[in-house]
Structures are given as C-alpha cells and as structure tokens.
Image 1 (cartoon, rainbow, N blue to C red):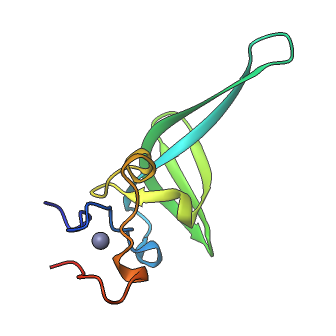
Image 2 (spheres, helix red, strand yellow; image 1 turned 90 degrees about the vertical axis):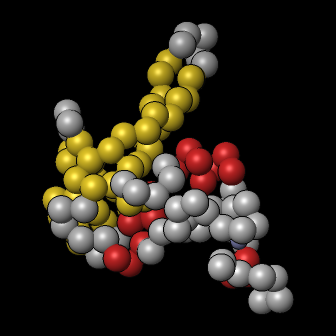
Length: 104
Ligand SMILES: [Zn+2]
C-alpha cells in the first residue's frame, strides 16, 4: 500500500503546500466540445507534467505539448493517485473524525 492509501479504504490527500519547481505532477484538463444542436460534450483527460513556476496558488505546469496554468489544488504529485482516482475512490475522512482509527 502506498502512503496515499488509508485503512478506511479512502485516499489520503497529498500535501498541497509541499510543491516545488521541478516536481512532476498529475492533473486533469476539462475539454468542452460542441456536438451540434447547442449541445456541449465535456470530457476530462489526465495529463502529467513538470512544475516550472509557482506564484502563490497559481502553478505553471509544462506538459509534453503545452504549458498549463493550474491551481495548487488541481494537481497531485506524480507518486500520488491521480485526480480521477480521488474522484472515483473517494478521499480519506479519518482526519474529519477524531475517534476513528487513523492511518497506521
Ligand atoms: Zn482514512
């Protein structure tokens, strides 16, 4: 089990304050595409890249093709589960519940 997997089955959030220039991170990009008749198709794809600049909570990440301006809380470290997994599996809630047994 990685340090991001908790006993409760949830995923532990990465330390968002610990990012540094040069870190490799994962992030999601949402694309909107018109599919006619006024309908919009929204899809999310996972990307990865390297932090090139940190300005407060704005983090610039250089991916293979493009460079993205992202919020600190939209990215996860490369060794952490991707944003899709946090969304799918759910976050650890132990910290929110003091009496529950925490991470071993
Ligand atoms: Zn937990």
